[in-house]
Image 1 (cartoon, one colour):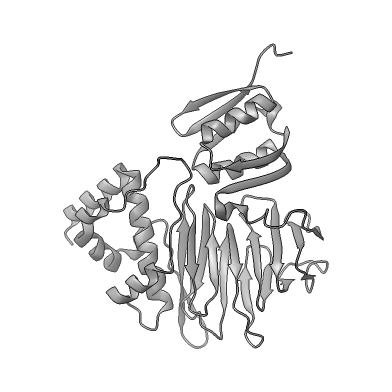
Image 2: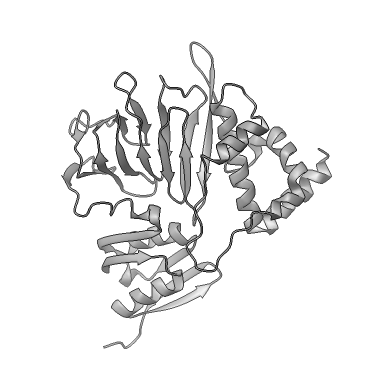
Length: 324
């Protein structure tokens, strides 16, 4: 591909958000299918098969239709770009790490804010991946070497295999799974790592803290690990399926500070929220269910009177003056 064609292609991506998102999705499909497969290159049939396994959820805003055909005008260019420039797009990271036997590289799949995606691994394990999340999968992933890295949130349905535990590595702890359904939230910019178990059993390890290593979680329990303090607590899950309600386009929260809730809303709607210091620790309990972000913010503004101003995709929240 000539340099001028590359420039035109990247220019089109930068100037069209929907086209860029579609390109990211298609590139992630190509990358994951090629890295996990038996060959180093994905054939057309492999990619088509993988499309059944990796389905992007629809947007939450009513009436919002995602463009699926617009990429066609760049089809030939994109096919070449996948092959030649895999490492040049920010959402995909491939790094080589040499071990005693062979080189292992990692494919990182990123789900942007405002999106949700699904992934079926070769061992049959199913992942439902939340917005602004990254999953790193080693090239030697197999039925006997089941491990991956997560930064973000995902719901796992892991195929049972006593002889080959499934390992989920986060930046702070590792979760060992046999055959289990659970939700794991481990965003790097969140203080808490939260694990909610629906079925099966998980064991924690990897933290430099004896209160964590070797601890087990039972169905109906939720574990919170505080990264800065190392505090680890297990308690009964208050409401079944609340932790994974995001899969169905819902966001449930209880007694949550506004500053923490704002992070969830930012990921859900792909917006930026700036909150006045005096409002950051107002606490809320409730549920967001497929509403527009403007409607959501106005609900909060009624509960705790404040002004809402929008500048592009930025939402600015300030207290109402002279309110009594």
